Image (cartoon, rainbow, N blue to C red; front, side, top):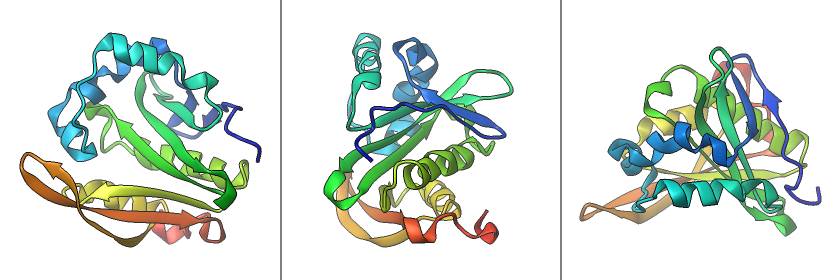
Length: 186
């Protein structure tokens, strides 16, 4: 693997992952406006639509990360984003994050999108390790990551200060020899 310059389109049964663009901002705004999503992702930032447009307009040019829109195949609607970032080239590893708009939760989109992008990381990019952090108050996400093959590695104690309370984050990863996860985990 040289870098993340190539921005693929990945297709599953329920979702298609394709390069995210500035035109996706209206569909993605609920990710940044919903207080519960902000809490679950530990996001303290307030984003304006203009700032988001500027951010997403530059994602295609980045060779150090892969930002893909999650598209519901049945409707063609953008329902979230899946991202490989924090690339550590010498160690063949990167971070992963995913976020879906509130009305797309619980429909299997996140599970399939996770499998598609993590599979791409191992099978096409030749990475060895994909990791993430999940906050203690987000057990639903943790279960979804476990179903996709991620394993807990440790706890980052008090990693997030949320409304005056310290919240732990669990560090999780999946490595190439464990991919794909057993069918029983599906």
